[in-house]
Length: 214
Ligand SMILES: CC(C)(COP(=O)(O)OP(=O)(O)OC[C@H]1O[C@@H](n2cnc3c(N)ncnc32)[C@H](O)[C@@H]1OP(=O)(O)O)[C@@H](O)C(=O)NCCC(=O)NCCS
Image (tube, rainbow, N blue to C red):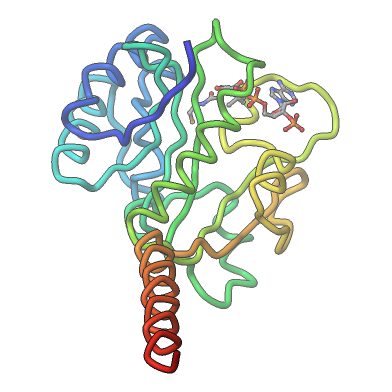
């Protein structure tokens, strides 16, 4: 069955929750909350994080491209406005040479452990970029890892440098031994549609003008 994706939202929450429960809460109960927390914020347990995540999803303050194979979710790529995801790794080093915060961040991936190595994370990344375009586009940053060899997949929750370069991101600076800041601008989907319709209108106007002159 071909993969599809849907935004993480109240209607897809049950599929997301099934995938997290299948993996014991992810890292023993993270529920994909850690990048939402303010650095230094008091830590809680799995039950509290599940509630927090569900509330954020219901309020439209948690985003992800959720990948489906049929009715079951098999992975996701988390993204969000920078204010939604304040808690990136290597934050001190990141802030040292920071000139401007991006509009959006792509912070983490999770793929069903039975489905890794099939290109699902790369697909999820493309879908997250499409979703950012649908939501208005802007500057997007991510913080992937570069190891140059096979490593434990839990080291790669922010994705690999190669995945991002293939998706049009450029290296900006290194913030840890293996961690990069990468960035790209994503145009708004509506701006694209408007440009297309402007071209169509312009070509209709040229058509009319030519007919008037004939
Ligand atoms: C890392 C992870 C997202 C990769 O997902 P995936 O669907 O298997 O990845 P893909 O098949 O799309 O491969 C993407 C790239 O990653 C590379 N990659 C995947 N697993 C790798 C590993 N263990 N070591 C090195 N590279 C790896 C692939 O070779 C591929 O590289 P390429 O683009 O240069 O060909 C997945 O293993 C995972 O979910 N790990 C757990 C992450 C986690 O703990 N998240 C918790 C949330 S914080």
